[in-house]
Length: 475
Image 1 (tube, one colour):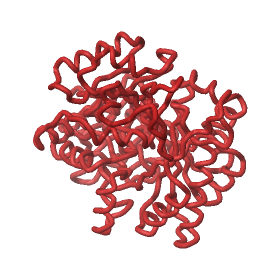
Image 2: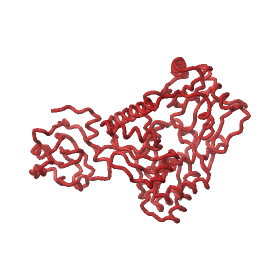
Image 3: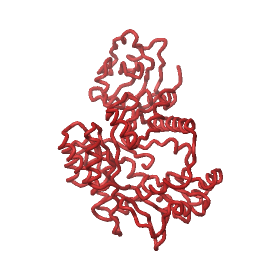
């Protein structure tokens, strides 16, 4: 009998991860009793069978089974171990699950699979400033003069404080440095970076971002679209097109391995770039893509190209499919920048909007009228209200009860917002990891707000379809 890795085994279960139930798949029996199953049709002899397991089928008519058989990635039979063993041929590979539990593959409805970052970036998910400084210093020592050094995955609650400009200056003054918070909406810079960007303590905040200051001095923290200026200055590490493509393929293969190890077989990529689309295809062509991808398009260039080609949500196949178009309308829950109707505890800070109501109207009208599902990042109650305004307007202009527009994260709600979400067939995708992984951060919201955050139970009670989403790497 051939041995399977955990990833390969989970990959065989991927066909369970969609909207299928076993009772509707041809060739699947509804009873797990010891009855003899009919032999599969000629040419449909199983490639693989899993026996002696505790199989959760997601089929109410037959919620449990012991075994199943698979041909070309599709189920051909499910039932008792004795029944399924009778279908084996000499070519069938048999895996004894040894009473282990087998479930449908999990779907992550909002994720950021940045394998290139995971493999090649400076991971600052560390517990002390000294460790972070050492990681940055090592990268700076191997980098060409004055090239950017970029870190990712910083978590302020691990240090019990944010990073500062001075912390990063101590790591290197010769290179511009940026360290992104794991939430993805704030970044910390050293003095060299501010100098290159021409940002001083006197620079005013843009309407859709913020340069954080303390006692009249830049702290080093920059939020939302105020960060855009830094991307236009300095020298970045460069790669040939061939190197770039290889890095992309390596990164996507790495993410498939990580997803499968966690039981994930389908992932909604909440911000797919043209480079990621190429990486998906390269991995699939080489047999390395073992998770299904629902691509939410954030790149303006990719979105324009799809519109010009009349390609829209649903185009693709079972492995790689065009999903919705993605917009970002406010800040982050974990970084305490989401836009709310009442301020953060002990402050006059209500959070940050990154789109105006008129910008949302224009963007959503454009995507909706071109047959795209839309997913808007909206954490705060103010922002969720604005997004619903735009969805309601688009649905009045171009009615489509099955468009299933989304609100990404949909963190802080109230009864009226829940009612409108239900009435318009909108899909909220709240985090199901944040309460555990970011618990220390919620004290800045206060008890009353926290009661109405991450409202999975309220959505379910209202009859709203609500998926699970990790928001990894932020989550």
